[in-house]
Image 1 (cartoon, helix red, strand yellow):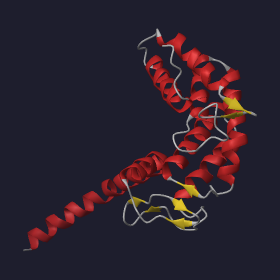
Image 2 (cartoon, helix red, strand yellow):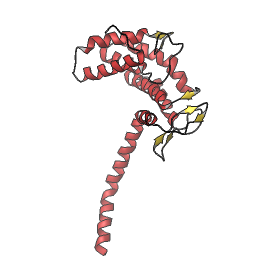
Image 3 (cartoon, rainbow, N blue to C red):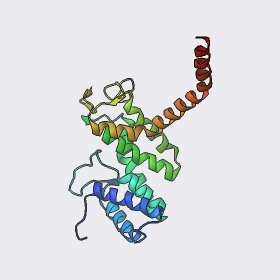
Image 4 (cartoon, one colour):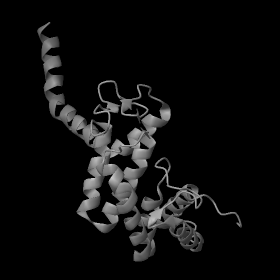
Length: 217
């Protein structure tokens, strides 16, 4: 106490507190949660949530303040916090997403953070605009980006390290793959379910075919 954490760190505190409180654990965190949300809301300029009050502009990597305030606002029943998150997302995240993240350098972590923010706002507000933004942000991992090339190589099962000056970075580090997995989890989960259903559907035929083949021999 007495040391104010950077906003990107405080956002993690907020998200953790919300999860614990929803699970019925550590109820004493509620007071801290309110104070932490006020800190996040205060660290903004012209309606945009910043990572540090001394910045000239925020950065995408590790920037989860919109999602954190949306979740906390919904949990606390505070529409004012949700509105702070909403305004920041529309002013800061939406233009970047609509442009295909047309920046000199964009990494999977930054895209995953932007996606998290608009996804949480879509869930909390029910606004179609945020659902569309989430779809567009996720499409960056395919070809909706300045390079016009997939950042997620589905055939190889790896996520590249991002795009620099319109050129795909061919490296594929652990952080990129973790961030990519977080961003693409709904799609990957759906793919796994579909694959499992196909195996379950075809399994009897495969088994009986194998048994029949063995009998003939």
